[in-house]
Image (cartoon, rainbow, N blue to C red):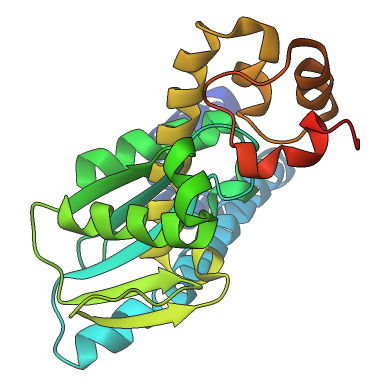
Length: 261
């Protein structure tokens, strides 16, 4: 009698949990012939886990196509760039520039807008740890009012590039073209289509959210910790009640302060 024949279902479950999913699927499929219905359900659970892993690998491979194409053309330090905070009524616009290692897989990596705050924070830590390099740029509310949000966004992106400790030779940028002497590709919705830009979107979003949460301590009546400066009903009502605070974008709140809304 083999060792496997002597295992209880509880012991099989424990062993499977300790194995890589691919190995567990192979092992459980062998046991199905000996244990029948007792192991069938467990084998199906692990098969679905493996399918999910393979689907995620395929998705991330598809999101790496711009990076793969750039590397095939001889580029090495390929950086993704994205921003957070173009639309809010208050606070800065923040940009991030991220260079990821070749062939590195970060499960769950996606456009920051598609992720929960908890998931973004976990991925933020992973990206910071594993990235070849990253840089962050920030342009404050008063400069946004002075030069407009598009120019402020571009400036934040260029600051992020300049703050990279490693010089990039190729940029993948979400939706804009930067006046830099670096080969670049502008892609609409790049944060959903490129792993590097998705990583940048997470760094930018989490960085800005943390900034707004700190500001909330100074101006708690506006609820910045909840809406991060975006034009929610809570925020608009607070502006109507308390007026503008020093970090509000005057060019974004003209109608509110004029009483038009």
